[in-house]
Image 1 (cartoon, rainbow, N blue to C red):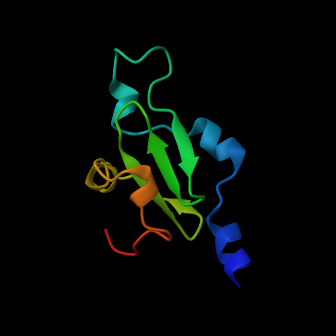
Image 2 (image 1 turned 45 degrees about the horizontal axis):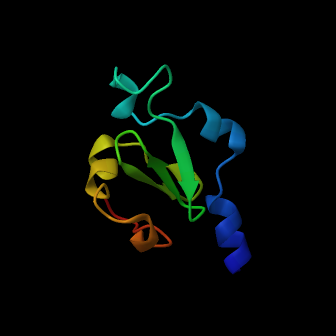
Amino acid sequence: MADEAKQDSVISPDLLDILRCPEAVHYTDKGDDPGRLRLVHDCWLVCDDSGYKYPIRDGIPVMLIDVGKKYKDVPEDELPVPPPADD
């Protein structure tokens, strides 16, 4: 069952390649493609440009600025796995 939960939360590489942080995408000082995201713990999307961290719940990225901002100061190794259900 744990494998099923992990599999459900993994995001496809194609989707990861097109998603951008909705905050950092507007930055003009971060190069030609700001807001790129990295997958962390198979259930978080992290933007190095903004520092925002977005949870992936049931395979769906929660790309709300308020949610990403909430976890900005949480170190990556302290992000809850799985992400909390309420934000």
